Image (cartoon, rainbow, N blue to C red; front, side):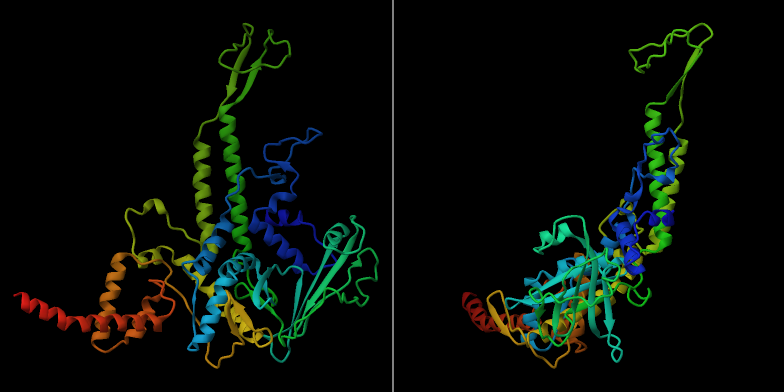
Length: 486
């Protein structure tokens, strides 16, 4: 069934096959894969009174299971409570990157990137403007990366090539006629510039082969000495340029089957509310439409008969059980959350919730490698490298040029917020380890930093030391007062 739906998505022969494939998977993700079908599910006959097969109709019910799994996995990556903190021994760099994270709303950009990239890949463009850093998340269907043969993980350039209409170009300020004429739009990022090219008409056969003309007015010379684009492969596998999608073809077919089964079940329920009326040999019927209602009696001849073609609900129950099994198969294939919240009788500990969501956590853990240790750290490194050319001022604070020989890493929080019992157990364990000399107080604070939203571990430790000294200074005076009173 997926192959039938994919065939309804138009394919541009002038573009690489992967552009069409990414478009298909994006439609699956957004729930628009059925848009290519002409008929609604309720339509059983076309204009010529011919029967319309079910597979040619849009389902009236869509489970949206694929988008649910993607959203759940991305939430475990970059939601407010799961976004990683920066670890760096250089306090100046750490403060600057933390300020950039808040100023650029980095968590929203990474959520967008991980969602769009679930189809296989995504690109994050880093721009330095007005002493600040801005991020632009772009789908990769019309992008082509070129890698350095000596350093296969380093980009040499990224080229964007797609078709746009004259109307779109005119709206963007180009001096072309605002009509439906198709043009090639092209731009390119390399280590020195973001180069824009003059649009070229598509209808000329040799136009695409001709060397494009640089649009000097829109071209920007950034001179960063690196390509300001982070290319992210979703999961291991894929075709080299793109990674493996979060959802496979098997899961897509299963979800499509569930959509159509639920649509059929809904159609059956609607029919049971208004079943078909059959009249046999009714001499009183003059051919006029019969209005079925409790207030409208139907008179038939002595030999006539009238009955309703009713159905029972057994088939509907069987469909629901079948769809439930399909849902489990699809979630198992995509490593989604198969736990049932209705079966939770009380609050569960963080560890218990991890076990219940183990499959989803495994998926999010793999995505951490792609979007966290890979993409997010690359963005931070580009900010540091780019500040050498464009000194940063964030939220009124001048951070200037950032440079550090210290490594940058990420500290990920727990998958689920701990309960009061979890905190009590952890506190007891940490206190015991500190008392026996097996753990430092700084490491203990790091262990609970995400739990209590502690951004600066050293500052927190200094505050704790200051409060302890204040308490110790007050103790002799307090004891004296007690002794005098007695």
